[in-house]
Image (cartoon, rainbow, N blue to C red; front, side, top):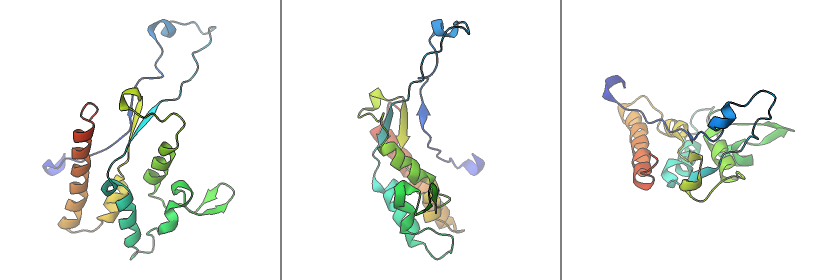
Length: 161
């Protein structure tokens, strides 16, 4: 990484649940394909410092016109409904939307051992907004929060991270 700084990028880890078995890979086009199976998801319940507290910190920084307010959390993170299927969404609120969707996902599992995919409830974009500024102190706040999230994952999910 530039300047010796490492940046943490948390992503959902995918297992090859849709990969066909070796015998299926040799199937002729006339044979039906195996049905699609939705992945099983385990949601890591991380401390609020990595998600809910960041949302509150972003709400508190309303000194700039484009900053969101509490309505960002309405409708599962989509914001207030303006019309049928149209919402007043915060452009950087996808982490909140995805987290809410994963919490109510029909194939959510209670054990990481049963999961095909892992959802890490850390909001790096909102962390950057909460610590936004040009000072070295503000930039270090973002990096410190990312390091803390990685440390938490390594302590609580060592087999997977």
